[in-house]
Amino acid sequence: MPEKDSGKNGKKIGLMMLIVIQLGVILYTTSGICSKMTSKYPAFSFMWLFWIGLEVAALGMYAIFWQQIIKRVDLSIAYANRAFAIFWSTLWAVILFKEKITPANAIGIIVIFLGILLVNKDAK
Figure: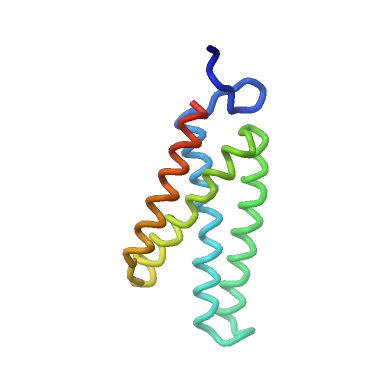
């Protein structure tokens, strides 16, 4: 039985492409960091505008980056891996904002990770 083709134009999904997808997801989650930082300042203050500007820039770069990814990878694979944003967002919350991870958070991340592994396993 032939291997499943999960990439565009007959290309298989390799480790490098999965890393590139995760870099796109990390870029996307930086907008959440900027949004959280924006909430610390009065509306329309210099720092508020600075963080809003960074958020818009991050989302703009992400949009371009993501378009390049979905040109090269099946949409189902790309979006399954995009779900990993919850992991990156939780990591940023812990590292940057000293938030706590609850057991429910940890279980949810593990379930999402297992789902992504199943989708990616079919893609190889």
